[in-house]
Image 1 (cartoon, helix red, strand yellow):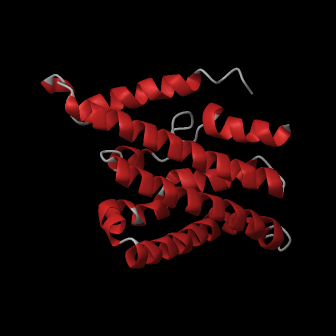
Image 2: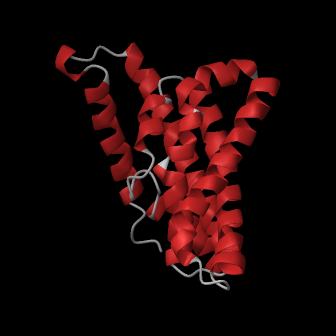
Image 3: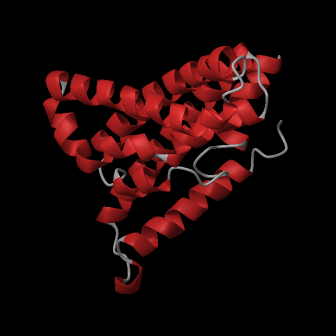
Length: 190
């Protein structure tokens, strides 16, 4: 039951994007089209889960035993950057349309605070390996869910008649706030 609670908490209650406010740049930037949002969600899910596992292993098997914990930030960033390069090469070769659609936001996963934040939270919470893996997956799934929901709503807003002062970023932020409130309803579950 503990593992189920970790997943529910990571996706809904402690959503990395809507409750912890990490990763807002790609959230607002890649959510204008559903295809781009799905591609970004998949890329972030892969990078975040892999980074969560690898950074946990590096921290507990390398940095802690040799008392090099002060290198945590730089080592985590190097891991994330390497994973993003791998994803970028894969997408460029396999799915060039998605690679072009993600544009500048794909390399920005390297500096996406949601990915780095999830890795740091796993260490700061002193999680063992399996809970750290599940938390990374839950944060990634929560990020993807929020991004895809937001993209769907934004596509519908494009068809609506929005007052001029609320167009573009303004209505996007209002919409993000409303979606965030819907996730807030899960607070009492876990």
